Each structure stands twice: as C-alpha cells, then as structure tokens.
Image (tube, rainbow, N blue to C red):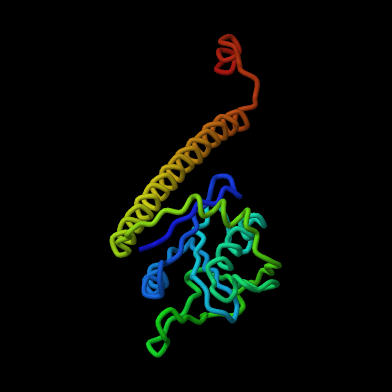
Length: 211
C-alpha cells in the first residue's frame, strides 16, 4: 500500500507519497518517476518520502514551503527522528537512487553524491504535519501498469510536439521559398530596366533611320 498526501504549500497543490512499509519502499525505489524527489532523515531510520514535482519545477528549485512540508513529513515518520530536534533531511532525484543486490531491504545509496541536498529541520511542526495527515489517502498501486501508462502518455506528448515542430518547420520553409521567389521576381524587373535605358524612338524617327 502507498500513502498519498497533498501539499497546499504550492499552487497547484503537489503530491507527496511514501510506502507503508519497507517492502513497499523497495517497489517505490524501483518505480520512481523522473519527476520524483526522494526524502529521508539523514543517518537515521525513516520513511522513504517522495515528492512528485509539478510540471516545470526542478529539484534544485523546490519552493521553501514545499520543501518544509516534505521534511516535516519525513521527520514525523521516523521513530527516532520524530523525538529529536535539529535534524538533517537529505533529498535527491529519484533516478539518483542506487540499489544493489547486496543491500538490505529499504537500503539505498546514490549514483552521485553531488546530487544530494540537505535541509535542516529544527523541530516538529504539528500544524504542518496535521495539515498533511488530513489529506492522507491509502491506495494499492500497480506500479508496472502505472509505468506503462506514464510512458504511453509521455510518448503521445512527444509525438504531438514532434508533429507541431515539423508543421512549424514546413511553414517556415514555405515562407522562405515565397520570399526567395519574390526577390527573384523583383530582381528580374530590375535587370530589364538596367539593360534598356535608351530613349524610345517614335515611328517618324524610325522611318528617318532608313532614309
């Protein structure tokens, strides 16, 4: 089962989710989306919390209020960490999580330590934790089907974008060809004017030329 929360610290509201147990955490590590950011209490056992970033947001630019919501939820779901003040919560993009066969269930490392950020949590903020808990929904998730659906949707968006790009390129090519033809037409008449600059003779003048 996966627990879903809604953070209204950002507009539009953002989805935060976590596994109900360490077994579910394994699935979340495996199936994290590219736009998911993973949160965990540093050096202590805690829930694996994920933020699904709204469109256009980068993991380096998560708004402070949304960052606080995620950090507070992680702290509240750490047996030891929930009792302590001045904790550090670490976070990184979901695709930076590294899992090897010799690791224990729920244990992870990182492909790059440079892509791990930290946020300081001074103390538990009950107002924030209670607000998030009121939005909690527990749901069974078919991770494999969810990934298939996501990839299908992403491919449709990519194909539509590619079609729009081709259409724009075709329109641009037509416009350039029309401009090229217009320039050639103008040049043609300019050359005609330059080649014949002598005064026109009248019919009488032409007759005199033959006399």
